[in-house]
Amino acid sequence: MYHLTALVTLLSIAMYFSTSVNVAISRSKTGVKVPATSGHPDFDRAFRIQMNTLEWMPIFLPALWLFAIYIGDAIAAGIGAIWVIGRIVYFIGYSKAAAKRSAGFMIQSLAAIALWVGALGAVVLTLV
Image 1 (tube, rainbow, N blue to C red):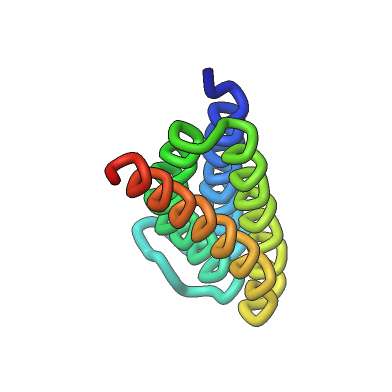
Image 2 (tube, rainbow, N blue to C red):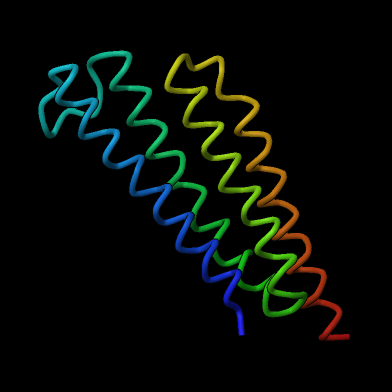
C-alpha cells in the first residue's frame, strides 16, 4: 500500500488548488479581467506561480509514484513532502518579488530530480 505517497499526492493537489485560488483573489485585487493573463505585477506573479506549479506537476507526480512503487512509499513520500515544501517556499517568495523565488525553485527542483533519477535507476535495475 502507498498511503504516504497518496497523502503527499493529495497535499500537492491541495497546494496547486491554493495557487488557483490565489490567482482568482489576485484578479479581484488588481482588476485584471478574464481572459487576460497579465496586466499588473502582483497578478502576473500569482499567475506565474500557478502556471509554474502546473508545469512541474507532470514531472513530479509520475516520478513520485514510480519511486514509491520501485523503491518505497515512505522515502517517496518524504522526498515528495520536500517538493511540496519547496513549492510553498516558491509561492511565498515569488508572491513578494520575482527575485525571491529561487530558494523554493531549487528545493522543489532537487526533490523532483531525486524522485526521477531514483525511479529511473530502479526501473533500469529491474530490466538488467
